Image 1: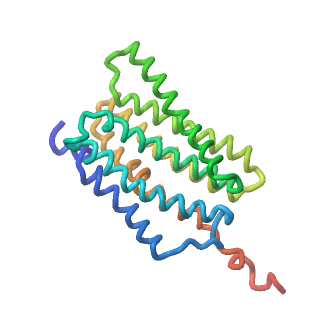
Image 2: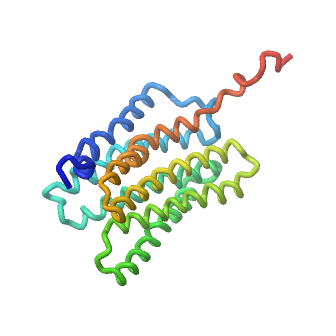
Image 3: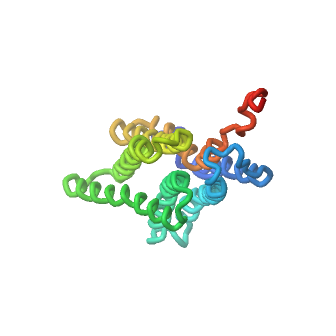
Length: 251
């Protein structure tokens, strides 16, 4: 590919590091001066949980591109086992945040340890399945590109989000439309960036199109930079009950 290609830009630190830090750092700055308004929360009893979780994962998503970029490429980590484990660890964290937020909002009355156990077990389904499918495919096609591994993973988490949003939410929260709507938006948002990654990787692997690297920039921003701001803002979209009442409601 020529030096002006999207592939080259995608691999650069402007896209892969600095550009991914802007939104999380701006969100953290906003949170420092604007406390959450429980009166606007979709699920008031989950306000503290969502507030803390979004702070934690805003910090995590700011650390992620540093740890999986310059750190693993450094002289003292390059080529080591740690350089392979660190990216995998952050991928699991990125999926865990979605599942933990979903179960925490759906069942805020449960102990955090119980919700964390549910989320952790569910988060492991996709990597385990991916490993088995990719390993089996490599036995048939030894030259299978490594990017196919990520395509299987992307498809797996996309399908998991669809299942949780359309089946689990519908069955668990049928009588709570506001809570169900929030969780469908959360899971739909995550499904969207995995669908974009998968589409981009199909263009790269199957079509050998440089455009795929350009498309990949969009889900990167959705995943790293905008996830915490989106789920936080969406959680506090509700208007206070007193503001929705008509002036004559109390007469």
